Each structure stands twice: as structure tokens, then as C-alpha cells.
Image 1 (tube, rainbow, N blue to C red):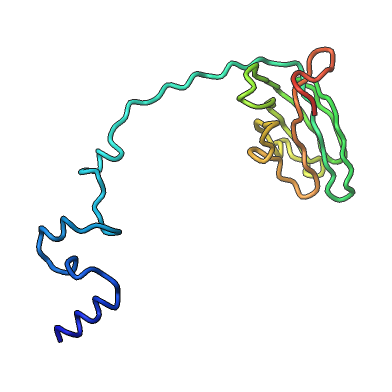
Image 2 (image 1 turned 90 degrees about the vertical axis):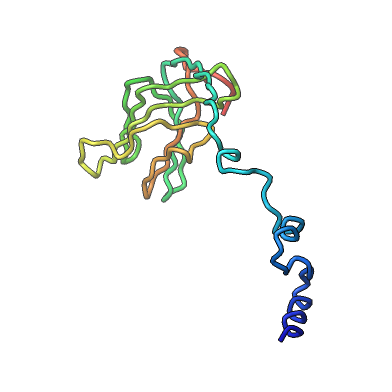
Length: 166
């Protein structure tokens, strides 16, 4: 029986010394069963002092440039909308409540608070209400079977794009 166990150990390719139950040999063992270098759970993920993150400075703009895609026809429309104004495009009514940009380019592009209603729904509640991000449109997207609407950028009072281009 002992020979069968030894043959099994050799077939697995494990070192013979590692198979003994001696405490000193278990501590000397190396390879994939080696103990982690930390002693307790707190040594690994222990309490840390929170890192203070500076609040980004954003600037409010008077309007936003939006783009709409009709998935059925493939038509794309780009339109400018002043803050607190509404526009009807196809079956949708779109309103921009705020558009903000940052001077810091690391934050990305514009963010706009947009409300969108489907006129066929006859509902007072918007189908979408939330912040849309120009650099990450899928982060907060308008989920509609026919239309996609997303923010391109903020516009200035003269109607020009605030930063960058499309």
C-alpha cells in the first residue's frame, strides 16, 4: 500500500518532502502552496485613511448641441437647444435643463441634463430624465426602440460650440 501511495505522489509530480505532515517541512515548502506574505486580513486590506478628491469645477453654459438617430430610417439630425427650451423632433419632445463643461480637459466633454418624452406615450412623466455625458454616451443613455439621442457638446450664447469640435 505504501508503494502505491509513493507511486501516486511521483505520478503527480509533487515533491516527496512536501507530502509529510511534519510542521518544519510544511513551512519550508515552496511553490504554488506557499503562504501569503501578510499575517492577518487587516494587514492586507486594513483601515486606510480616505483620500480626498477635489470637486471638479464646471461652468454652466446657455445650451447644448444634441444629435438624434432614427434607427428605422437611418436619418441623423443635429440640433442646438437653449437651456429650458423644448423641441419636437419626430415622435420625441426634447428639453435641456442644464449643460456644463469643465476647463480641465481630463474630465472629458460636456454633460447635460436632458428630459425626453415620446409623444405617442401621452405621459406627463418623461421617458428619460438624467445627465448625459458627451464623452461616454452609453453611460446614461436614452433607451428607446426607434430613436437614439445623445449630447455632442455645450454651446455658447452666440451658438458656437464651447470647446473642441464634433
